[in-house]
Image (cartoon, rainbow, N blue to C red; front, side, top):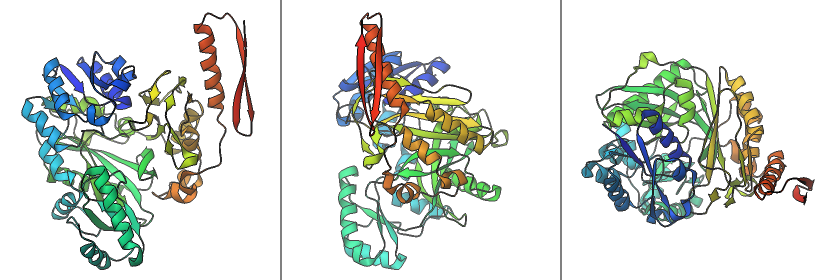
Length: 496
């Protein structure tokens, strides 16, 4: 029986897993790098341990140290969260061989789905529709050109060894192919240590829709419906909603059935996600499988009533699912926005600094999964996600209103965020209508560049931060005047 879990991650997802462990009466242990010593996840866990230096390779990616630490502290299981080592089959195998429980799928399943080309081949054999393209790794330019001509332009070059937009290039004609292929190879090599590329037919203006599946070690499979994840910048999701307003019941049934078949094809258990591209005619194609917990899992928890993280832990502990497909129904509509420390006016450039103030919105059906608090340092070493804001209502229209209000009452000071940009996207006609595709930001926001939007949150945040400092220093009274001109802010301070 699992009594202690080592959480091999950081930030908001580590905090989320800590809370699930507390609910289950399980001891939570976290690791932290030297720059994360005072982070929220290190403070909230029952136990916290320094693992190494700031570089991920020295800390959150150090397989040997993590497994050794788990043994040393008597952890029964390791939860990887998302990112870092969550989809590393070699790490999972190392955990399995150590006798420690891995809270996730088997190393065999992850290995089968880890190579994008191998996964495409497996899906094709299993009758799951795939985007027309190659199913083998391509390493030479001559082979690539011939394959592209056979598929027909426009095409999409993609890294065989990974995702997240790394090594991904759109090519609309043969004359641009060689330069794009070389660039894709360089990016892939840098990101994944593997420069092999595969080619897909470019489906223009598709929707990105994924299905959350969950399965136990006893052969029981369920889906928790779908999520619409088409609002993306640089191939990374920033707003998700569940369910998709685009799907009808016939398409939803076909899509979720295909997802279950995909999971069964690789003998999958625990939580996982099958991602699809869906064209304007509602034809869908397998994109990839994420063999881990997804960032956007809160909205699925809202609409299904299932706590996915707690279910993950129970499955890893050998328990069968305590629900079946017939027990599940869509309870309403949920929307999530990822809050990043980044500059939407400068191609979403990541921002570093210190969070001086953090006030989350409150109210019915509002959920904030955060990994920060006032005083948190946002460094250059890790992904700049700060939190996830999710809302739930009976209808999509009500959920959009709830989300708009929640964003208006979310204040982060001391560091630039994308909160105002999320609000702007949420109010865009295409999002409101549900007609948007994965090109929404690229085409409607010039790649994310918008006019500077003054945020009241910055005024309030800075003022509150200064007021807090005054109080901490024992000053009985003081005033803070926040002035604004030409989108610049400054403060006049006076105190006794």
